[in-house]
Image 1 (cartoon, rainbow, N blue to C red):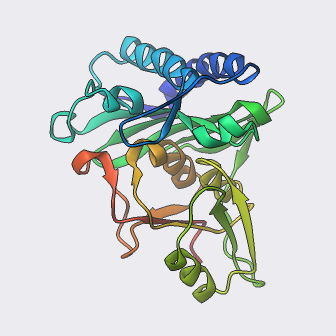
Image 2: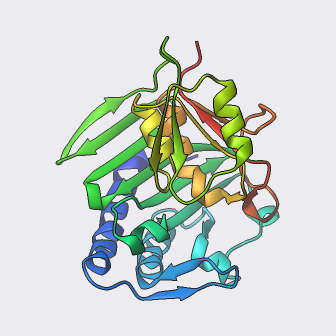
Length: 258
């Protein structure tokens, strides 16, 4: 049995190590290639994933690791083979933002137990921010070397603040936001959108297009630990270990209920 809160400092150190590798590439000229699904991948994605995947296997050799780039090469286990406890790793979420050099990219490590995220670390090294969350132990934000507890908020009387994507978006998402009486929309890349809700800076983030579980697991864990929630479009809890590790049903991330 893994105690998420006890494991968390070691995962933070591992993510910090991978973030330093990413920033070395970020300060140079990113080498960009195209994967089979036409999405971009850089040398930074590959280098950070090696640090994270190898580090996780050394720390928890009994726990399977599902990592985005390994999965693209057919080197990760299938959903029916991971069991109830497994890692989900996105070494560089927001590759397009990384290439644009706008700072809105993240490194993500999430631990899944029985379909739900119980530990998450999300780093945004270009803006010196790192979020953590562990089931039963709350969430935190570290900036400038100092960590503080964070919590999701209830929707303000003036209406919800929505996080929306810089690179994606659908008319259906906009319809939901209009129906919710959204007061303001704020754009951000990558898993930062979950983290802003976890901080109490926003209230809702819908995403109805296809995403992968490694895109959401770590930030979902942070948001859940901060008192928020993530559901499917139909309102059921978003769970992990689905076919192809895909979030085909879309999701809605929200802050604290009530």
